[in-house]
Image (cartoon, rainbow, N blue to C red; front, side, top):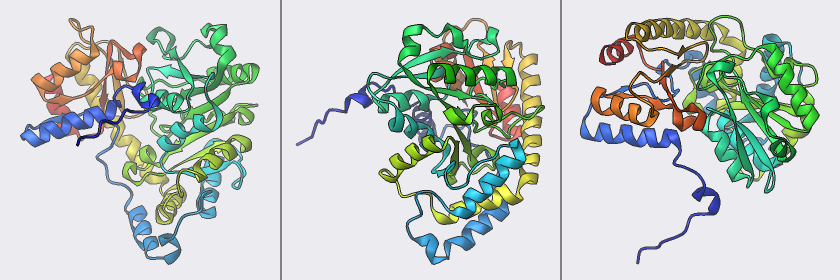
Length: 385
């Protein structure tokens, strides 16, 4: 007998997860033996720091790291995060109440509304934006409202254009700069406006700062540098981008002690913390591997310059590559559907790229290329385009 179980309503509301669908397509191509150039997902090909791998290997033999981890994370990792935030952003944090290690920043970002929002509430999400924000709202039983990130506005949301009826129900606002997928950076004046907006309307600001260290000019800010931000903000950081540690699943949340406490309370009922050896590796990365991140930026800058120059030669317009390791590009003439253009690249060019529509309705008209493969592959992709 084949069981036919009905999915929960929250899952029925979710579209297929964008990157899971892309993974499925790549598996099918690999199964058929079809070679392809993967410019789809932000998973760098660059190895993690060797010293971090050595630290994790050594720490794995320590019995305490073979037991359940502490829910609040190792004191050594929280101390390293505190020191790094102070040095990088001049932001002071209490290591015991204002910092929480995560099983990757995605885990924290998606769990966060479950601790603080529910039916009747609304979560403000950027569009285009990371697909996890939408899922986070739905898992919490809340509604979501897409804030348009338009090219003409520098991919910054027009906060004052959010309808009053939406503002009245809004509980959490997600922002993400340096931005995925648009690569936009937020000036200090916008961050100040965002903090004022949240304080005025009683909103919680969930600030996704995963790409803070992948920049090519002026250093991006932490929103916690803005006066009055800490009282209403939780900021999320990731080791995945800064140290190419995507598979290790390590990040952190920091900010308001009460909001961090709410997330911790939720997590103690869901997971058992981050593996201790990974935490020790993360602490080492923050304390000793600044040079690695400097070299990483140079590698991505070289890839970006190569790919952007190649796209311009091919006649592409509306090219954005201001930060992170993506290139966000307006669709070429003759295409209005990002899904159809991505399908064309896959079928006719053997290139896997991410359609803009997958990041929300206001991502339509664009395609995202990830610079997470070497220059040889990028050159091959440019020849095919």
